[in-house]
Amino acid sequence: MMTGARARSWLITRACAVLACAAALVGLPAGPASGASAPGPPPSRTVMILLDLNSSESWVGIARRAALAYVGALPTDVRAGLITFGSRWQLVLRPTADRAHLEAQLQAVQGPVGSDIDSQGINAALTKVTASVPGLRRPGSRLVVISDARNLSGPVPSPAIPVDVITQRLDPEDKTNLLHGLAASTNGRVARPGQAGQLALNTFGTPAASPSPAKSQPPPAKRHSSSTGVRPSSPWPLIVGLAALFIALLLVALAVSGSMARAAQNRELAGRIERYGPRRKPVPAEDEATGAARVGHGAQDVAARLMTSTAQDRLAERLDLAGVGRKPAEWLLLGGCLGIAVAAVLSLVTSYVLAGVLVGALAGWLTMRLTLSFRIVRRRASFADQLPDVLQLIASALKSGFSLPQALDAVVREDNQPIAGEFSRALAEVRLGGSLEDGLDAVANRMDSDDLRWTVIAIRIQQGIGGNLAEVLLTIAGTIRERAFLRRQVRALSAEGRLSAYILITLPILVGIWLFISSPQYMSLLYTTRLGLAMLVGAISLLVVGSLWMRKMIKIEI
Image (cartoon, rainbow, N blue to C red):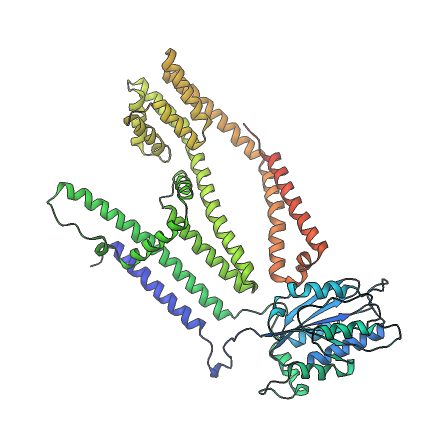
């Protein structure tokens, strides 16, 4: 028969094995019978089309047809995006394999854009496009500029990647020589609008397994019609498989922590029994600890090495204040597991691995820290609520003839946490030779309790000049109850203001996160343009100032 602890460990181990197998099975690619192919590596070639809109309406039509012909002749493994420029540039569509979506964006292009006849937005686009579209850093990627150079002036910057040019001289004033120089300086090609499709074929070629370009254009549009055009969609089987894997890892962490705690308790109990029983040879630690416990000890050692002694002491103090019976290394491991889980989910949902890792690390650290802070505040509030009843109990014990340490010992024996555990600290200091007042003062500082500080002052005064300590403690208990009643009344009256503050603070953040996930193209203007960055910084500043202002208004000291 297995004991309860071993049965739980056995069940957790089997659950982890089942989840790991499910993750492996779900994550496997579908076979040929299902009609789905295994997800391959991301396409290695990317094209960004830069379309000039600050010209005549007739040129915009010619440029649109040239862009459509160029896109239609691209091989299916090439991802294409769209940038429009005039006096400013705009990232319309990030690189995508969805030809239908890209063609729809090209059909929706309108021009010219306003009365300010200037095409110098191409300079900023050529300078910043590599940073805005990381896929252009891969070998084989190119830029395609479609412009009649009518409104260009001055030199055009040359990016670090090849630039192909589709242009034609419609007017003697057109500065097509600037675009020819741009193509020559970057080892690019030059073509007329009617040669756009041939330019794509000459640059990228046609895959051997695919039909001719004219016939292969419609199938890719149907094949990739489910793509968003902004970011590649993650396969749901992979998401489910990774979720099962992380649940298995979490169960392993729980099993390891539980095994470590049980092993420590068993060793402590065996040591106590051994002092009173017959002498026996101690069992080595390796034989008592299970395999999961050994793995847990190794992970704890690694986490402990990553933390400095100061950080460990500070975290151990906060864990003690929160009433958490875990070691700093265990708490760090739990936070790391949470951060990895959040990073994996965000990376799969948004397809931005770097952002997912950064947000996951921040979420893991912030969640564990806020959890400790919340538990510390709740424990201190529970201490404050129990203090009046405890003072009344001490006063009753003093009236019956007990001394103050004996009355405190009676409170400890009642075992009402957290106040019993804190007062036991003060009694422990007395047994070690310290004074009771200093021990109670240390408890007041730990619990941040002004009421207990006043009680310690009253005890010091009574021991200095004499008096009835029981009556003093009863008076203090009554005062604390009146202040607690007034505090609750004020909190009830200010509940509406606090709820409004919470909603006004969290609503913009939640809406922003949702828009960044659901419409990244719409929100990209906030971090790709100077005006957007200024608006984003201003919004964050106003949100912080408003939070501090509302906190000052709803926080009432009593």
